[in-house]
Image (cartoon, rainbow, N blue to C red; front, side, top):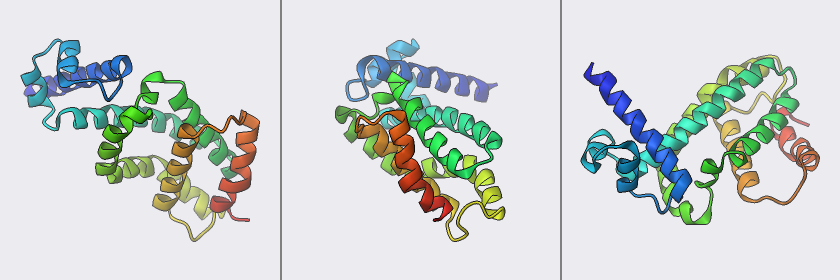
Length: 194
């Protein structure tokens, strides 16, 4: 029973953190703001989330990443074409973040110092989560000879994660078709081969 209560308390705190990051921005949100939004004392928040604000930033990011990865895994299970899976998966990831203003708060310059430190510290955990979701699809495509034999899921996932992040942060004003063409010309050959 105590574990269920602890999990419930933690989820309330993460919900409140997500709400506060959306309202005030990552850089300006304090643990006091999160505690107030959760209807709890600051001490309760610190007891439940020993890593403080950094742990909450990561928890919100991981929750949103898991939501996206579940959606991506469902898409990959329906996709027959590896080039289409890469292109449409990347486009979907970019629009997923852009369409969620609270996610954009993690990408703005004033949040960069906060989120970069958190993400850097948890990079392996984030990469592992991504790999776990795409590994079955990646391995099946590799066995079928639809992607290059010499690449591995961790490196490919990291590469795509970096491409997605750069497309989110550095919007060149391309429309969807131009971005699709860019991905087919420069990203797909790295994974599928010439």
